Image (cartoon, rainbow, N blue to C red; front, side):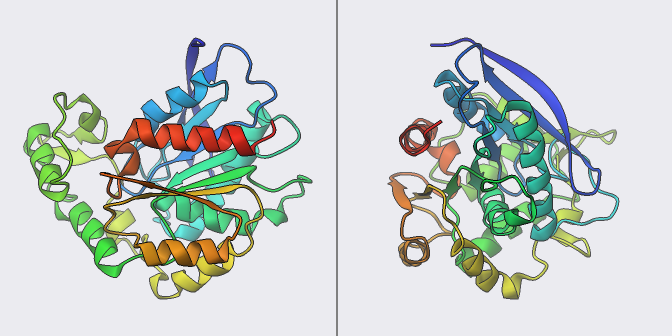
Length: 305
């Protein structure tokens, strides 16, 4: 097992917004490999990828986990721009900067994108040809429990959970854990709440608040903007995918049905598919070891460098 060095970084998004990141760099052997960019889902932070990123680095690739705009330690944008188009633009800028630091000059970074991070990746790769790199924006794509067509009830459940306490906060970290346990009844409650505390911040009033900008949910340009047209936009985007692609679904997902998976595989006929038993929409959190092995084995098999 190689030793890993962690580097705290700051990238620049499409509105000159600061994007906090952690790079997991193997001590040796990564120079000829495409780096891996990890983008979390809505309401999460880069720390949700910690275990996966470490395993990627242990296998010899640089892994870069990023807080999306308005999340974690990244800037809350004054413009209030939190549409998928803005997350797409940030992701294209990230690819450029990550490639400058760790690219091998032959291919772009691989992307592992969960939910919101995956949707951003679908849109970004479709428009990546505006950057004259001489190769695709991404060298490979791993979409985590996300497809162009999602269940309305699943989306509404997630948004409802996120909005419920975003303005009033929680009286304690334990209270936040109680709410999560109600939302995710199939997941065992963690013995330590240190991981959860990274997604919360205690303010001067003593209460704990999610560490993301509420404008992400209820601002003028929020994440639901353009929702009616999104399915067709995403279907058009994934039709353009030409690089190695893996779709990973939680078998108990409330967001992605088997029919949506079949539709995706028709749109991207070269894509591989992995269903993870006993996992829901939060696949990496539910079954990280199984997920990480599936994702890393895919990258090892289908990326030549």
